[in-house]
Amino acid sequence: MAKKGKEKKKEDKKEKILDVTQLTTKKRDYGKTILIVSVIIAVILFLIGAIDAIGGLKTGLKWIDFVAFGLMAISGPYGFYVTYHHKKVKEIESRLPDFLRDVAEAGRFGMTLAQAVKVASRGRYGKLTPEIRRMAAQIDWGVPAADAMRLFAERVNTPLVNRMMSIIIKANDAGGGVADVLTMVAHDARETILNENERKIAMSTYMVVTYIAFMVFIATIFILNSTFLPKMAEAGQQVAKGAEAAGITSLPATIQTKVIPQVQLIFVVAVVLHAFGDGILAGVLQDGRISNGLRHSFIMLVIGVIGTRVIGGG
Image 1 (cartoon, one colour):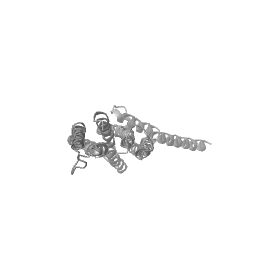
Image 2 (cartoon, rainbow, N blue to C red):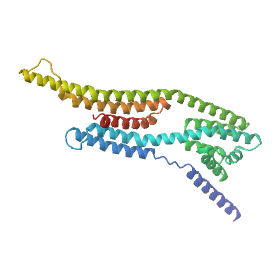
Image 3 (tube, rainbow, N blue to C red):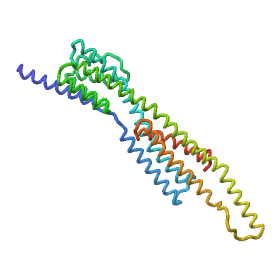
């Protein structure tokens, strides 16, 4: 009976450990859901734009406006969500060297890796603190320290964290001076983060140049739309009136004022395409991620639509 009772307690403990592991590794990533909903909304707007282009709707807007709204629907929600998630991960990575250093210091006093993690969990590491406390909770429930770190790497799931945790787990399995390995890994993580920050600062200049170039492009279109094209229309009317007064039925060369609305529409199309493409380029220049560029695309699309449709009247 006593033996069966012990076996039952072990099974209950294993089930509790499994439950805690599942709870602490559950991800709340709504990126795919946001992207799917955004794409559905964008497709609906594109269809409305296509119907409007063939004259099936009278909405007071042009078909390119619906295309712009559709691109906003794709780039805005998903772009800002991914940027927020990426920023949160970067904040976690920025405090990772401090955590590894504290674990290494605890290990130098003769503590095991599990004990060192539990001691370090009492500290404050910003956005990293909840993840460390999850690891400590898993260890309290009997999960090995190596498995707790592996689960932490799966939750954060970035190249830096995966590389650091992999090194620590292998060093712990091999035995020996884990504290020295932790110190080395902490130093390497700090250097990697500093290099990424330096690159981001250096490439931010090119991102600003992209915004400035886009604004200059809009300003050029505004000048053409507000001064050059109206003057061309006025000149065309004067030429037509002069020819009519002189009794001339046909001129060898005339100003085609009828194409001015088409030219203005081409301006709007060019702004929308540049906004979406330049935004993606700005994100790639900033940190090498297309998903971050969607946020910039949304901002540029808003600026472009306002600049061409409201200010420019195009």
